[in-house]
Image (cartoon, rainbow, N blue to C red; front, side, top):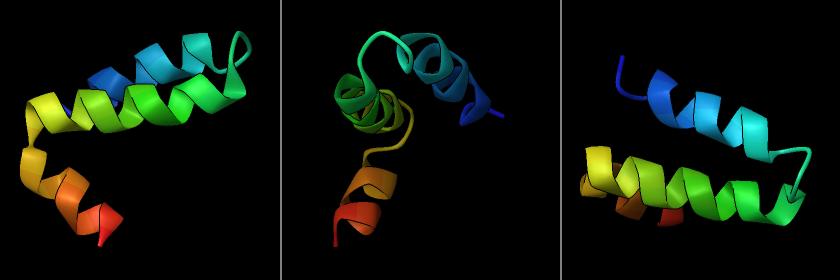
Length: 42
């Protein structure tokens, strides 16, 4: 369920900055589960 939180934030910033949304996702996920970020990056 925590994954939905960052998604909402990204959805709002998506229209503002399409490139920034990716950064927000990584940072949001990193706070929730750092392992997920490393897994996606790898």
